Length: 335
Image 1: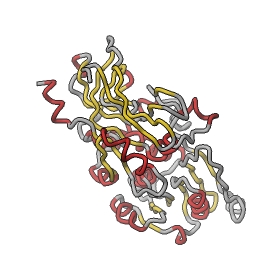
Image 2 (image 1 turned 135 degrees about the horizontal axis):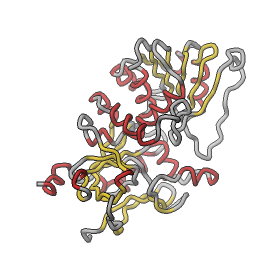
Image 3 (image 1 turned 45 degrees about the horizontal axis):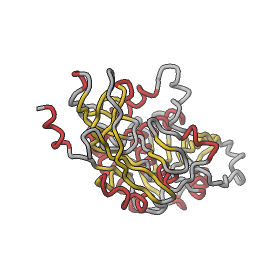
Image 4 (image 1 turned 90 degrees about the vertical axis):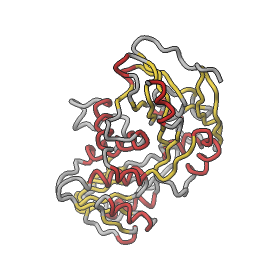
């Protein structure tokens, strides 16, 4: 492979991924050459992309920055890359940065398209920044505040990050609901209680639904107290979902609202842009407990063989990161 080449992960067809060698873009003035250290795999979204289940009507909105190819396949996708700047303006060389770039060994980015990773956040944990940004936006959409009773249905990566943030609110009582009892110790680590779906009571002020399942949405509705707000964080792609609007939904005057990270929450939009929100999400990752959410670290070269199983429905995975060249192997560039 030439020194001006890179290796990139492509989703080729339903359930099939591969690595391609491709030339790097030329680095112009005001751009950076970044060598990847880690990239985060967004399990729910990338499962839909790998399986070719992005709805045609949403294809334009689902494009990630610097994506190559078109849905359904083949497509180079991903948006949680963490790397070290190898070349660029002197002030940037050697810095660790986060970028909304697909999974690739090296890439060229405009300076304005990267965000520095705080010193207190290791590169591996920084690969969760996009997921943390989703959780932060959802809390804004919910209007959650101190002393609220908050229930999170779905103890996947995004659900647990949402619970971890909610538990930082003074006096908040946070409960995580999931079908898997093994998630209870993780919830407890963040200061949240744990219940199985059949144990919920209609008592929450705010309910976040992040299970991406019809049964989970029904549980979220069942957990909501009078005039509570249910925040739907799951995205179902092309799949139709039945919503349980019978029973006590109307008598309890419930609100069901959508939260999606593509736009800053309306209550913050006048003062916050996407870059400021992303920087805040990176700062919020300065918590060593969050390392427990990375359950699978995959060598980049092994990604085509391992990702289809890890992305499959029912796989026992929370956070998945791809590992590139170890950080210590990059440091000689700056000595």
